[in-house]
Amino acid sequence: MPAEPLILAIDNGTQSVRALLFDTRGNLVGKGKQEIEPYFSREPGWAEQHPEYFWEQLGEACKLLWHSTEATPDQVAGVTSTTQRGTVINLDENGHPLRPAIIWLDQRHAKVEGPVKGPWGWLFKLARLEDTINRFREKTQANWIAQNEPELWAKTRHFLLLSGYLNYRLTGEFKDSTGSQVGYLPFDYKKHRWAGPRDFKWQTMPVEPSMLPELVAPAETLGHLTDEACQHLGLTKNLPVIAAASDKACEILGSGGLTPDIGCMSYGTTATINTTSQRYVEPIRLMPPYPSALPGHYSTEVMIYRGFWMVSWFKREFGLRERKIAEQRGIEPEALFDELVKAVPPGSMGLMLQPYWSPGVRQPGPEAKGSIIGFGDVHTRSHIYRAILEGLAYALREGKEKIEKRSGVKIRKLRVAGGGSQSDAAMQLTADVFGLPAERPHTYETSGLGAAIDAAVGLGLYPDFDTAVANMTRVGDVFHPNEETRALYQQLYSEVYLKMYPSFNLCIGRSGRLPAIPGNALGDHFGGDRRECPAKDGRGRCCRTRLAGAPAQPLASCSAASA
Image (cartoon, rainbow, N blue to C red; front, side, top):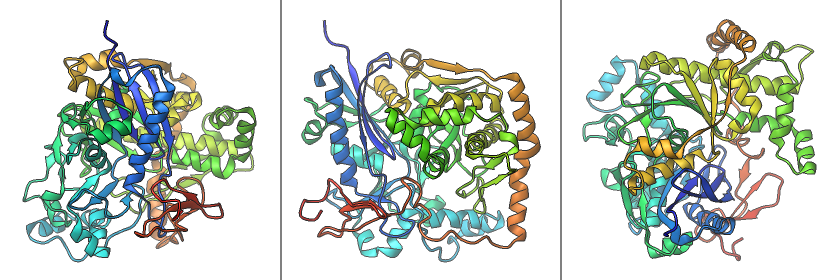
């Protein structure tokens, strides 16, 4: 009897690369997780990483995978990948990287010189959208590279997202999934193709159509593994590589979110709430829905940029005691932080937090600032921690209501994935704030599972997505709202939280301009201090990364001599 077919799903996130083996019932039968340096900073506010580094770390993750499972490479029927969104890579005519990848966390801004030319410029002026379009132009990485590294940009023949780069390394072909196109690129979010020749996006950036990869829909074949890729992944056959989608889109599919009445929440570095719809619905005016991992569908998303990064920030700044105890006990610190939440009553005794530690283009807006109000002498760090979780839940509930208003469809239940979903306290708090059941998927690896579902359909292991999702996803734990707590949160949300942002925004306007944050705006994203580049190789690449005051660590892409 032949062995059951397995799917190798690659999940290249911000903080790790995972090589995951799933069977056709959605069970995780093998896992290799390789922690990675999210970025290094050559200048304050920059976030970069070498493209080769991602490929090297994928190989290490696959080695860990094959040591973790009794499954064998000959059982794998196909390969698929899902990646972080918005990270861009320049390649030359030979497919070699020209510079470090610019990571989605990067904060540099291009210069905006004059309005958009032609009729579009007049239209944006009449519609009072010039500021919005200018912020789009500022954040477009291609503009910065062309302005500051013109010789390098002139050598660029391929301009890819990380997903497209990994697909190229896997197959040797410049192809990518429509489901992965989230970033500052000339993409038509309504038609799921590159923008037409008259689209204004071509006038806001120097990208040429020839630089972009061929697009295919999720579940379609991108190509087959090259001999080099087979060896790198520890496989023995030139297997098909199936298109999936971005990590958030795959997370929704892996959570079983096929319909607009299921709110899929991601408690990750960036926190989001999404629904899947066949209709093009802008959750916030002029902010397009992103491509879904379900072909021909849209993901209506509201995002809290700093999301559960705020939890990491709290642990680093206020959680030394729990981290030390966890290390002594050999447990995860999260288990002890749940105790902090439980030690404080719902509502955090009047402490309220607005989780806008970073601004946005349209939502919450470029003027946004975070705030904590209601301090008294009774408040401790436990209250701050609970207020963080409550503030994030309030913000995502506000996002839910925006989606419902724009789509006309009520969300009746929640599916919560991401690292924060592993906290029972956070799950119960979510159910109470939303007044809805909060369901946790059966596996933590929902992004990888979503990619595996795309592959299962693409490989013909299931005839359609409904059948694949029914067989490969299921609900794990369910948290129901406590009626008394729900009523309290409803009052705090409607009478306090919803009024915080307009009031605070008015204060900012009256005070003129708040002082800018000096130094690296990214510096505390992961690990505390600003990452520096203390050594470079002969090609000017950063060879080592370090936290300020800590010893430098060599990257695998540097030779022993240069490290």
